[in-house]
Length: 280
Image (tube, rainbow, N blue to C red; front, side, top):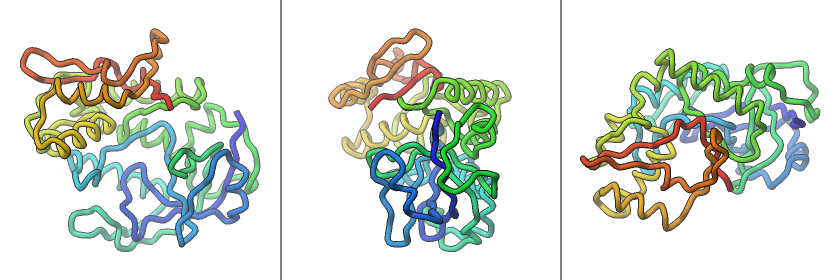
């Protein structure tokens, strides 16, 4: 599968960085015009990357965070993999005030998504590719990406969207299964597929480690309604249906149909994250 290599530098200072959020400045902005979609650049010429196939715990979604130790560990690991050092955060660790950044690397991308973020496989350091070169991204190369390293180390959940090629998706699914079996990182406390109780925000910000997409949906519901009832929450998801493919049975459904509530009002996701592809 053909991807465009774009070389440049990674940046976090002045931004609300987390484990899957980093800014990238291309050496040659002309290469952005060679990918599908419009890449959004800020005044510093930085693009916000969407690191493909992974989702790390939230550190500042709607001014809330997931269990802090694991969420911060993902950001620290991302910085380490990219060679970014001496990051100084603000008091609540929602913004990087300074860092030894501007480290070199490249991304392999085909497109920008609807928010103008290049959907990227991220690579640190120098490589043999020419800037702007088209390459074939196979399993061997994808396994060298920062994306894969975060997932295989237990710092991120697998989160797949349509457009990701099946062989790379299988590689990442295998890495997630191995990290889960080893109880690495997030998997040591993950409750996404086990019934968990939500009485208020503290249950998902301090206690339960769950798929970030589910965390974001529950948090938004709590913020909007001031209270939480699992059945009302699922009903609210039906109002804006999110289409999902269950890979193992090739069945299309909606995200709300993947949630189950037991007799005690506890909720869970019925499918493992790597068995899902989110569409649209």
